[in-house]
Length: 238
Image (cartoon, rainbow, N blue to C red; front, side, top):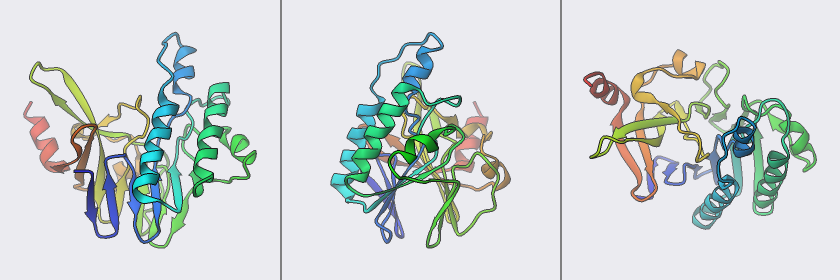
């Protein structure tokens, strides 16, 4: 299936959470510039993230026509400076979004120096953001939950072994009535295996929930994978 609906929330195969009443699409953890950052370490990857992100955005706009897009942290990747690839690709992606809708960008732990890029486009970098009952924060710092809190940062995923015992990581949403975790939009963000019960976000470590898990598969779409407690119990037996 392409979507799962819970009240006014729509969990989508694009790794995007759609808020129907607010006509708002929420994504996180794009990590633009990852390829150049890895090249500096001697690891050379094909530069395909920008095209993949634009393609995903095109599909989101065609399917939902959102009036607003929220990037909930880690729009860029490199901590120490604005690399040329980041600068150029971020501006192109920003221009694509702002030509079609409002854009809200929330600071993630990788977003050092992002303010300089956004300022050239007249955009603000928020530490957190609220719309009605929804509260958005990246998730790398501990904050008190407010209303329905939506975070990124964790890059949640579930690991499976196929018929030849190859390990496959499936990105996923984590849902509870007051706390939602977004998957990473970056194709290079393999993510945290949530079956291991070891979160990186201080918000999740402080606010444990028996989340519902919605996996994302390129061909199958979005998949209900049950409760976190069941997944972790199954994982503990292997």
